[in-house]
Amino acid sequence: MPANPVRFGAPDPAEPIDHELPSASIAGDEVAMRLRVRRAEDGTWRARLIFGPGDAETTPSTAEIFCAESENDLWQSVRDLRDHHIRDLYRSLVE
Image 1 (tube, rainbow, N blue to C red):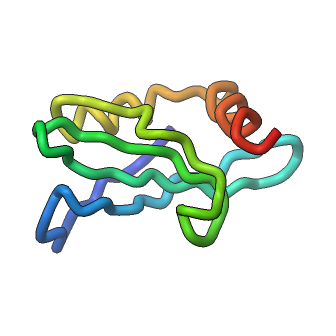
Image 2 (image 1 turned 90 degrees about the vertical axis):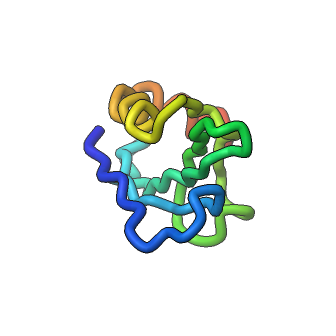
Image 3 (image 1 turned 135 degrees about the vertical axis):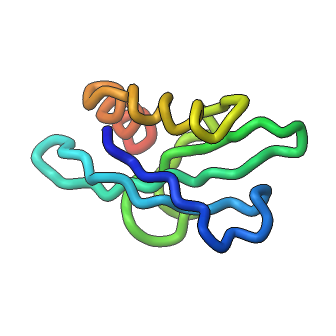
């Protein structure tokens, strides 16, 4: 999955930043996806997937299932996701 981490102008890495990801085709529908990334107090990078447009608090989203020692490692784990994993995550949240 191609994704470009961009943190230009982010004054505080602990402040979550949403990154747009390519949409996913799920059951014939295109579902918008975002990744909310932040740096935790312990220095690890954490992120969660948000499915659909709108407020992240009201749209389906995972817990912070991505965790890595560096931001590059975190993005690598996102790139390693396969389409069937994304579909399963989405279904687990909306069904």
